[in-house]
Length: 141
Image (tube, rainbow, N blue to C red):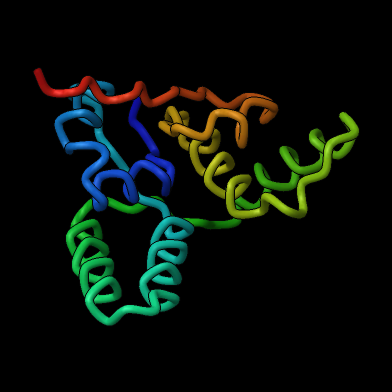
């Protein structure tokens, strides 16, 4: 078993809302993985920053994350994605506006990993996904 971490968690760590220890308190000794989708979202966020200092801080955070093991997106991921998107559409819910989330979910399903997120609503209707909600951090005493 392992964890695929949603982009929102990495952003919270980078911005100091979560500490790495907060994430580790959920994942324990399980391996933690990065997705190319997350890399793309974080890189876009850095490039879209209007302030050079914010851009540099975001790029530095991304460089640190690139040391984590990454899950590939391959033909198997595409098959899972097609199944998931088809099931969501058949249930009467759209999937086009949430393509990035479905790629993350598809990777987690493909590899039998849990997906750790704060944004449960983005994923709760994905069939076969082992979804874990990131608890709010405990404020310091």
